Image: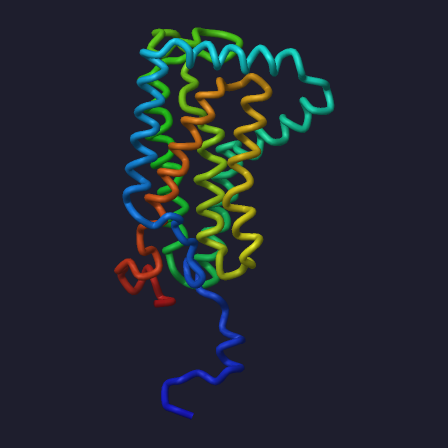
Length: 238
């Protein structure tokens, strides 16, 4: 056997590295798509200010949902919405990252899990405060209404994409391909449906949250977390 090459059995017994192979892939991979997401978010925000038919669409969707909300469906949608609870997701994501850091003697998972809520919170809270838009059942549907309500974009929908994407990045070596795809993409869709149907966000709030969440997770996944230079005392596994 060539020197320095692990035996097949040793390779099988070696625990998978966090943030290792297979790493979540960006589809499409080009930066042009990130630019498209940013442009779409900016265009949607501008349209909500200068194109009144979009506001009327939000009201039509809210009124239809209000008139078609049986109790069993309400509870199902409540579950969908809570898939995007930021506090719980932060706790789970950071908890998983600490477990991986302890198991593999590297701080890499904690850096990713710690940056995700910081970046998300800064962007979402900043946009909410700037746009000052009301909720479907209190406040104004118009942007920049100077009320206390701050609902645009939907933080729940964004969370449903960002945090689950981070979990997939952390746990990818432990998960099968189908499970990775489901965990990465299904929660954001469920939160989108749930929070819009319950009238807790306007339709366009949810669209904006989805666009923002996709942009954030794509930017986070572009960082080469596995090979990022770190001091040895922070990355003994390396």
